[in-house]
Image 1 (cartoon, helix red, strand yellow):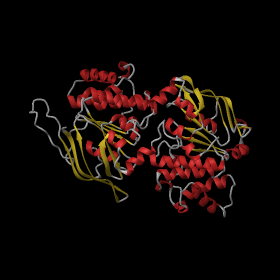
Image 2: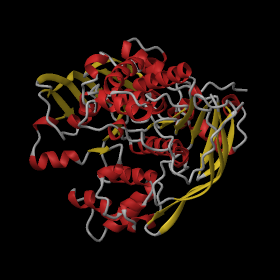
Image 3: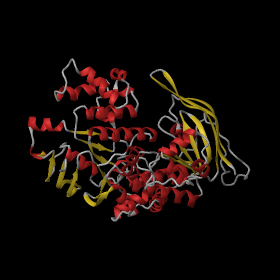
Length: 258
Length: 281
């Protein structure tokens, strides 16, 4: 039983007066607790798929099933309720938050909007969320712009898990982080997945990162699926031209290991 | 080896909200003529400040200490041993002529309302004294050299009509237009996807080799740096942690921080984190 079932999803835009399909008849499924990576070069449709799945934009054709419901047919209160189960973390958390808000305010919003905790209970919940993502509860009073990029991405993850989602869309969520911080954030995501069985739709242009954390991968090219399968198997032996190009282009560290 | 650029005890501080932030805390290194030197580090390491200081591009408010001395080959007609040291604090006549600079975001280095051919031609008009006709012909040759498709019509294109990778090719064409001695690439591929990044790295490698330029390649990616550089300098919190040949840095790093950077690299041969955690679908 799949958690997310996307079938024949299509989104067309106009470029230079001519219509083109940013996403063209794309189908895939994500199971509970699974990480499915979407890989591909710029313009391959990865982020458009993320926005379609989150219903930040509406598709021209296709279906999105989420937790057994027809996600595209939902509206109003039913859509809001279901959205609590489907969260997102973007590349640049500074752009995703009100920079003048405090960490507490950022985490208070989802708890309040989705009626998860009473006003009196929320400060305790916020402290627990911060602790859950490896941050000191004392950070709650700090402004978003005052904390480091790695801390900010942890707050973004804390906000995402506040509503107890079954799926988080991670759109280049570790791409802007320093490598030392990146490793910690990936470990955190894996730990959350293991404990809470959260599924990830993990969007990245970096096959090294994908190979480290994803179970399966879908490789996109110009809005279409070029190939898909077990992440390690596809990366070890890509079949499509774009898959081969991505593997070929990945920076390699050639060390003479002892 | 001949030293092209000598940096001694370079200190740079910026003022932020009235507080001095020390971006470089006394860095000393020599850049040798003809070498490809990578400067790597994480955010806040001072790597971009070092590049900007070398190019004389630091913001006016920056507090600067130490020396940056250039030893440029003599210009035509002068004696071979006639070198021209220039000190950092003085005005820099070098940028564009002796130093080509490629930034991370080509959109912000290109004028959005000027055809790209004209932007490249301006460089050779300014620094080589060419007339418009010759400058435009040279611009077309440069667009061919950076492998922009259809260079004749690309001369008349505006930046917004090009992809990110193509814009970076144009920025590189402008950077090398006056035949600089030194090319500085500051995170020049970081905003590009992996495939385009590999193409731009290959382009930089080819141009540097064809023109005999010295290269300073600034990057946060140690694997990318290692693919291009003869030597690697590792910066952290404004200090030079380690400097050595690429082979030594990769295989016998002396500093724990360098080892940590190497270990954090997620290559296609690394042990997946999934396995270490024992997670399964």
